[in-house]
Length: 201
Image 1: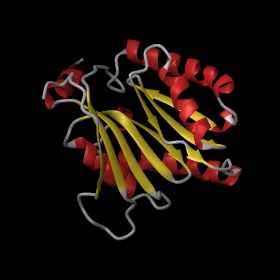
Image 2 (image 1 turned 90 degrees about the horizontal axis):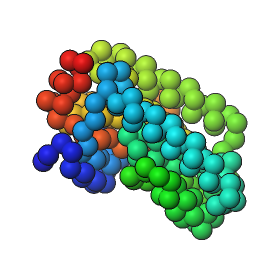
Image 3 (image 1 turned 60 degrees about the horizontal axis):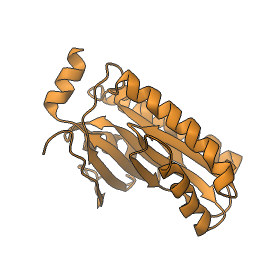
C-alpha cells in the first residue's frame, strides 16, 4: 500500500505477549505519511493541529450542552474527542461540529454519555499518561516523541506516526501499565523508508 493512502480499520487485538493483568488493546489505524524531526510531523502539520484544537474547542460551546466536559486532541489533522456529554444527541452534535472545522480529516468520537468524571479521576488520568510515557522510555527502542498519549477515565489513547513494527510495541508497553483499563491505538502508519528519511533530517 502506498504510504499516503488512507486506511482505517478497527479491531480488538491482544498484546503480542499475553500477560495477566495487561489491559486490552483496541487498534484503529490509518496509513498516512508525514515528516518531522522531533515528533515526526512537519512543522506545518503541528501548527495545523494546534489551530484545529483551538477552533474545534471554540465551536463546541455553541454546539452542545456540557461542552466543558469535552477534550479535543488533534494529531496529523485527525481529531480525538474524549470526555463526557449529557446525552447521545450531544455526542453526535459534538462530532458534527468538529468535522466542520477546516483541515480536519477524521474524527475519533470516544465521548461517553454520562456525568463528568471526578477530580480524583482526572488526577489519576494525568498520572497514567506520565506512566505510559515512562513505559515507552523504559523500552529504549521506542521513540517517546513519536506518540501522543491521552488518558480518559483509565483508557489510554495513543496517536502517532509509527511503522507496522512499532505500533504493537507501543500498545503492549501501554497495556502493561498498572491502572490502564484499556489501550486504544489511533496510529497513522508509515513505511520503514519514511521513518529512515525522518530520522535522517
